[in-house]
Amino acid sequence: MTLTRNGIAYRVSLDLPKGGYVNLGIGIPTLIPNFLPEDTDISIHSENGILGVGPMAEPGTEDPDLVNATKEFVTLNPGATIFDHALSFTMIRGGHITHAVMGAIEVAANGDLANWSAPGEKVPGVGGAMDLAFGVQHLYIAMTHVTSKGAPKILNACRCPLTAPRCVQRIYTDMAVMDITPEGMMLREYAPGLDPEAVQEKTEPRLLVADDCRPMEIPERVNGVRLVAETAAS
Amino acid sequence: MIDKNVASCAEAVSDVFDGATIMIGGFGDPGVPGRLVEALREQGATDLCIIHNGAGGGDFSLGGLIQDGRVRKLVASFPSGTGSTAFRERYLSGDIELELVPQGTLSERIRAAGAGIGGFYTPTGVGTRLAEGKETRIINGREYVLELPLHADFAFIKAHRGDRLGNLIYRLAMRNFNPIMATAGKQVIAEIEELVPVGELPLEEIHTPGIFIDRMVEVPRLPQLFAPPKRGAAT
Image (cartoon, rainbow over all chains, first blue to last red; front, top):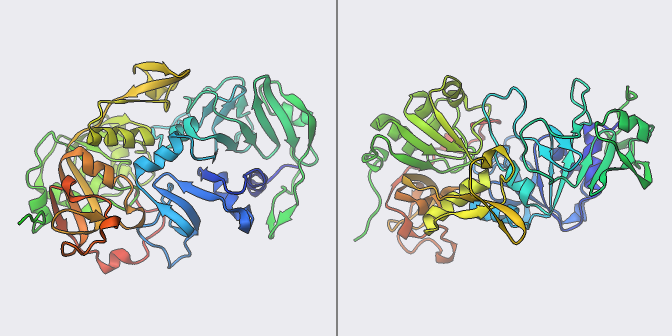
């Protein structure tokens, strides 16, 4: 069994501390707020100058002056603040944002990240990804373990242009949770029904297995949302 | 009596010259001075260098200016939005130059220009393609790359309310790049939604003091613009 995209988001949500200041990238990370407990007091940061981003605006209630970094119409939580781009990136580059969760095209065993320029992409665009990768206190990656064609995304060395070298601390995928350590990539948890060998098969670098490595404790559903995929991993 | 307000967008942009460098505020749709850019399309200046986070969308405002073939170079962090069709077409045909800058470096280069700073060292980009060929330096054991200020002949910005002295207040996320661009252009032109008498803006809530503004034009927000816009609008 492997996790759904919601399952990956749920698993990340368990590791975000109360009172954290968190920037969420596009893709799987945008699902994380659905799983944060109500009393968490986590402030979601958006690069365009918002701290305290609330849920997406309901259709018909959108405010044309209120979008997030992916240009979706959002709401504000009580206590939210708005500021200009220079202060927004002061929060990022200055290490005030505690966590960023991003997707990735490739991650290397040493924590190198490539997620801004995909093979075959004709018009380049970097946005705030590099500033986040260099600046935040903890950089987590939430992604599928392999590409849509089944090729590993966790590699000995990145082949795509780097976003930042040696910046990733932890990777969450549909198969596993892994830490980047000075000794190498360390397997911490694997999806229910898998084992370390199954994760290794889909991972290019040699995985170290933590002494307390264990299956993830993850419910099949939360609030009716399926977290564990119905079909077995091939 | 100082009155920075001018009668029309056409008048506000009348002295933009061929080859000018122009900053355009906004991120997504909020805070884009779209009517000023439309007036610039009418005005005719060409061979422009535009500094903006994205590459505009559709055929309005910056997207239209690019589509008209008036932009020689774009300095941006995210010109690859799906709505930026005009830029995409001209970039792929080699008809427009791109300087790609990480978003935080873009905003800080603008801030540096406005603050009289000759450059700064940032960790962002070290060891990547975007720092190739740039001077680096180790400071306190960490490697940084030297980035230079971004100046402009003109800055087009947008604000919600303003008075004739040029004091401005932005609404919600329309602030983004606007206050820093207001400091970095030689001539700063503001499109404001509502002109109010001097003294009416709460003085502790003024985001951009009038010293930075050269002229401004009132463009009331149209009711239909306040209606729920469609999702996935221009970048």
